[in-house]
Amino acid sequence: MKCAYCTILACIFGGGEKLPADCPMSTSDDVMEKAKEIYNTDPEIRELARQSSIVEATGYMEWPRLRDTIEFAQRMKYKKLGVAFCVGLHREAGAVSYTLEGFGFEVVSVCCKTGALWKKDLDLSDEYIGYSKTGYLIGEISCNPVAQALYLNEQKTEMNVLVGLCVGHDVLFTKFSEAGVTTLIAKDRPLAHNPAGAINTYYYSMYFGELQKKLSQK
Image (cartoon, helix red, strand yellow):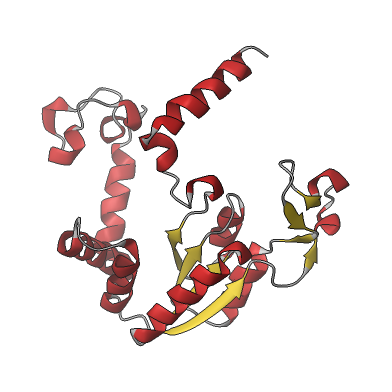
């Protein structure tokens, strides 16, 4: 089943007889029951789900994501938040940290370059060090999302906020973070960190259409 291509969306009305035969709610009923069991038996998970829905309903179409983040953390009674950021968004990370502190949170921020991990120590060849393939300076020190996560674990943050970590680095951070993780800013350099712009504008058909043509010709 590919839910993204479904035209029925019976799930948003509670399911029922209109469920497609290959819908996960039809083919993986055991998974759905397991999820319900977790919500019903794990108080922390239930509260996370409850407060998420309350924030969604309260600020729908009015609150920016930063306020969603603040409201959710407040409702969960978190006191200590982590901010894991890309050095390229140092200014934004400062503004986010300042705002969160203004709402009474203790904020621990950690830069992607912490640990000063050399790219050559990750077995990267020279062609991927110093300058990007597109000619921009990227340096010789690697991003270190594992160290970012381990450091925030040590600081015992209750929720971690991602500000612009690269694709892949965010995967590593999330894998090693003991606290729950939310993404405030998803990095997208050419689109001013608005990844949806690649889908919701001409850029989608123009750029990805041409790219697909090139790949199909190989």
